[in-house]
Amino acid sequence: MVRRNFLQTSLMAASALALAGCDAAFSALNLVVPRTGYRVVGDLVYGPDPRHKLDVYVPDNLSGPAPVLLFFYGGAWQAGSRKQYRAFGQAFASEGIVTVVADYRLYPQVTYPAFVEDGAVALAWVHANIAKYGGDAGHIFVSGHSAGGYIAAMLGAEPKFVEAAGGNLLWMRGVIGIAGPYDFLPLREESYIAIFHGANNRDAMPVNHVKGRRPPMLLTWGTGDGTVGRVNIDHMEAKLKSFDSPVETRLYPGVSHIGIILSLAHGFRGRTTLHQDMLRFIRSH
Image 1 (cartoon, rainbow, N blue to C red):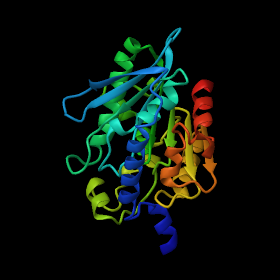
Image 2: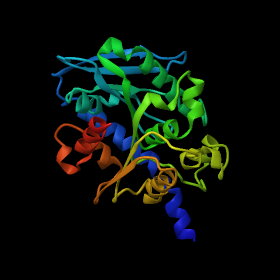
Image 3: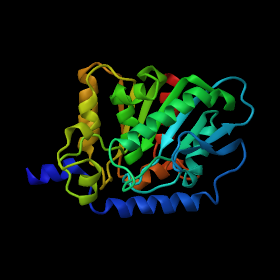
Image 4: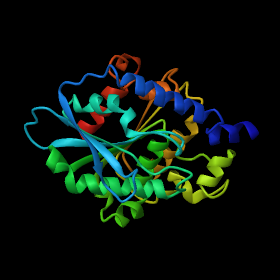
């Protein structure tokens, strides 16, 4: 039982270091990411806080309203910057998808559910404004890696967050979780206990907010992930299926928590099929 609980939490003390490594890797990749085929409209304000900003990656030569992908990065709800994720923006803008990378407030400035609320406000901004950048507000997909995957999944799982921002679940054509934690109680790290208001706050788990049919979800994970365990994707998949919600899962053999998101970057896409899987999911919905 102790071993099983350890796997369930899947948020180890090493996670902060791993995610710092992800930030560093993406910052380095920014130097070699192709600059052609798209333009970046940066530092757009979606809310009152200094961290309420986002960047829009606009494909060149759009012939009509394009699908939209809103992305939230990881960082243990404590670190990260949208400026480190040009590689993600390029990965999908180069395929004709208007891509948005958003910042959100972090701990210790805020605790749950403030970062989810920020995600909902960012989604509302995208819905209201993305047509100015060639995007189709009727075809918005929400994605995230790690802590960002948690935000994306919570937006898809719990209607009240999007409704509080003036919208509804129909704003999302689909949700894509990349190595996201969705069911990771009990918490053991002091920072996580503080962020989520206790070691066993069931309200903080996205899986517990699936209480009806939800937008289609694509849940992805690498079998070499030592930070977020497989139980998260398994429990979320089972809960969604129990309400007949469309859900797909993709497992990438031997891929680590950082490796899965790096596999979206130019020059690294042969390491997994994540890029192709996400494109297929977006185009099929």
